[in-house]
Length: 631
Image 1: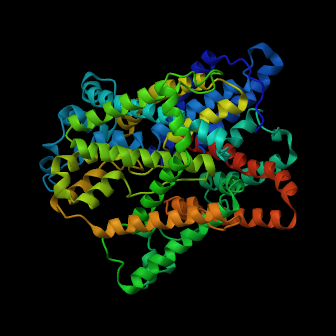
Image 2: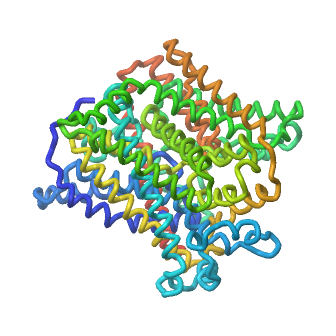
Image 3: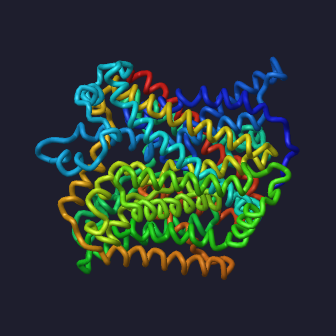
C-alpha cells in the first residue's frame, strides 16, 4: 500500500483523549457484556464499541474542521485513539480481565460441600486472591460501594500483583511484535484486512466514505439493527428473524453428537457485519472456514456412530491447539532469515532503524522480551508453579499469541477463539497430573484468565497499530507509547469498572457470571489425579499434521481451495454462529469474481464496509438506549 507523507502527530493530545475515553468504554463494555448480557463487544476481531466511538469522533472532528480547523484532529491522532481503545478493550474483554477479576473472588463460591478451600485454598498465597468474607459479601450481593477502606484493602494487593503481571505480559508481546513487524508487514506484505474500516473512517484509505454504495450498505444493516431494537423495546413489533437453531432437530443417536456441549450446536444465522467483514477474506479461507466447520460436525457424528464419542476430552479443541501451534511455527520458520538479521543487528548494535519506523530498536526489543519473560516465569514460579511447568506454559502461550497475530494480519477472520485448549490442558494431558504436581495444578486456576479463550486477545491489536502507523506515515514509537499508556490505563480502569459495577449490582445478580468456572475444573483435576492421556496427544498431532499438509499444498499449488488458517479457526465457539454468514460472503465474492471480474469486486467494497458500519453504529445506539432503559 502506498504510504502517505508523514504528517506531524500531536501525540500528547491524542494520548490524553484516548486515556479519557478508556474508562467510559470499559464501563459500557461491562454493562453490556456482564451486567445486562446485551451484546458481547469483545468476542469479534473488530470491537463494536471502538468502531462506534471512532465514528462519533470522526463526525465531531468534521464539525471542528469547519468551525476551528487549527484545532481539528488529523487522521493519525484519531487512529492513535482507535488503537488505544482497541488495546484497552482487548485487555478488559470477555476472555481476559473479565475472567481474571471474577476468579480473584472465586472463594466466595467455596462451601463445605465442594471443599474448594481444602483442595485449593491451602496452595494459593493469600495476597493473590480475596479472602475477606465481608468484602466478598458486598461483591456478590451488591448494594454497596467499592470505596470503603475494607473493600479497597481487600482488593488492592491482588489487583496490583495481577495487574502488574498483565502489564509486563503486554510489554513482552509488544517486544515480540516489534521483532516480527518488518517481516510480516514489509517483506511478506500481509494485508491486515481488519484495519481497513478504521482507515476509511478517518480518511486514511481510498476515500469510500463519500461513496453511495457505502451508505446503501449502511442503510440495509442499520435497518435490520433498528428492527431488532424496536422489537426489544416493543415485543409486539414484528422482528425480521435471520437466524435459526437447528440443534434441537438432532436428538437421536448418532446425530445427538451435535448437541451444544462440546460440539457447539448447529446454527444458521445471517449477520450483516459478518458478511461485510468476510467479503475481504481470501476465497480459500472463507471456503475453508465454513467447510471445516461442517466437516467437524460430520466427524462428530461419525465418531458417535462408531463408538468413540465418549473418549475423554473435547477432541476438536485439541486438534485446534495443534493447528494454532503449526501456524505460529510456520510463520517463525518463514521469518528465519529476518530473525537471524534481528539477532545480528541487536548483537552488534547496528543502527537498524535510521528512519524511526520500528517501535523500538531490535536490541531494546530483545532485551525487553528476555527480561520481561524472565520476570513472568519467576513470578509464576514464586506463586507455586514448578519452574519447568511455568516455562512450558509461557512457551505454548506465546505460540498461541503469535498464531493470533498471524491469523489477523494475514486473513482477518470475523472471530478467532478456541476453548478448552489452554496450555495447562495440554501440559496436564501430556505429562499427567502427578508429574505436574498438585500445587502447580492448583495455581493453574489463578492464571485461567490467560487461557480460557482468545477472542479479545490484545496481541493482534498491537501489531495492527504498528501497521496503521506505517500506513499513515506516523511514528511507530508514538503508537507504541500510546499502546503502553493504554495498557496501564486499561488495566487500572478494568479493575475499577468491574469492581464498581459488582459492588453496585452484585456478582450473584448479574447476567454473566463465570467466577467459579476455573475452580469447578480444578476440583475434577485434584480429585482425579490421572496419567498422561495419549488420546489428547493423538488429536493434537492430527490437527498439526492436517495443518502442515494444508500449508504445504496451499503454498505449492496456486488456486488450492483449502486454507490452513480456515482449519485453524473453524472450531471456535463463535464460528458456530458465524459460519453461514461467511458462506454467504464467500458465495457472493466467488460469483462477482467469476462473472464480473476484479473491477466489480473493488467497486462493491464500500457496500460491504457499509454493512459493517451500519450494524455497528445503529446496534451500539440501541445498546446504549437499552442500558439507559434498564438503569
